[in-house]
Image 1 (cartoon, one colour):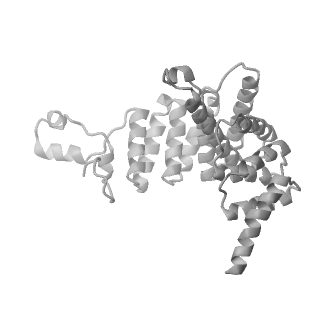
Image 2: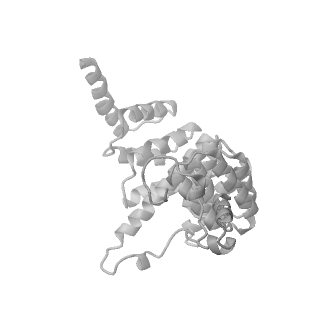
Length: 305
């Protein structure tokens, strides 16, 4: 089976590894030796090769633990060659394939803990999200992630250092473009990262107040800039992350409430938001009207049925 075959089914593990085009030369044309070499494990020599195999495993949905244990062993051997972002990519692939491996998380923590400042906001959020999904709530790692994010936000406020993930929009934009599309994409990326980051800290029960305050301030700026509308699913997730710790951030909640006027939030999520607001002893006219209209109609509709 070739990798180009997109049919559903199991793919032999050896198909995921880069094949040697010079097998015949290496074995001197001996058919038996050639067959033995084809059946022998492929060798991964670089982090990029390892990530390629991991992505193929994800693509073909290979759940065989032999493959993922093999990749961990290779990562252990090649740990000195990894760049910080490559660790994030590998851990995130393990999350997406839903393979839990404590050894990989221990290794990534050891290699990344003092190099987190080299990661973008998106990578930091993916790292936190992956750790939270595994239930690997490493206190030092989450504290360092929070420290990097809050320090970076303070510097951005003082116009010192931009996020390392940012690019020059002028270079990325066509001459005839208004430049709004890159700004919109940047805003969406930032809001997505914040949503994942807050959700990870909430799931791991890490109530880092400084992080939540700093992110709230930037979220309010993003919302008020009107660069884009926050996806409906994110609105409820952000609200839930703050409510998880009983953190009533009125300015942020007011801004989120205005976004909810036009957002198509499912009735179940809206009812959940209503309960969270009551628990936080927070309300405003916008949300009261939304609850009365949406949830009132939902109750009336169910009664009519």
